[in-house]
Image 1 (tube, helix red, strand yellow):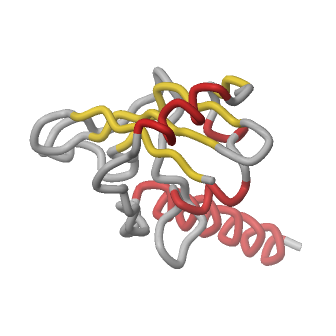
Image 2: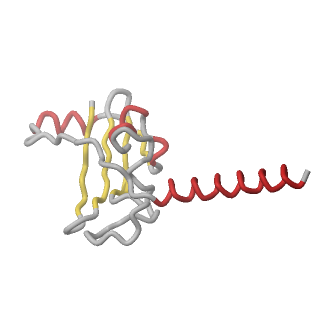
Image 3: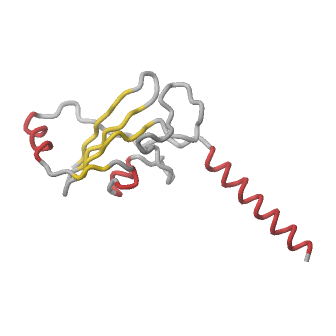
Length: 131
């Protein structure tokens, strides 16, 4: 009976250690996001005329858009929620948190835009749109 209890405790401890190791490892590489070099005035006007639902949580973005913000070959999101911890600079103090943080997003019937901060050498704000 004691051997079974010791075995269960060892299994529990190894599971906790493994989960901690997975959570604290640096995120993988993000998929490349291709930004258009120029957006026509007609496209800008059309984008502004859509009826967008405001999204303020990463989890509420459409599934296809979420894939853009997951590490390559993995399932971890590389975009933090507004106000959540993220790495804003080029010095990485905590490799387990993303270098991008959602500011605001909008979703319409067939379009989505995502405004996010990106840390690194010079904090930047980016708006990405998708059809």
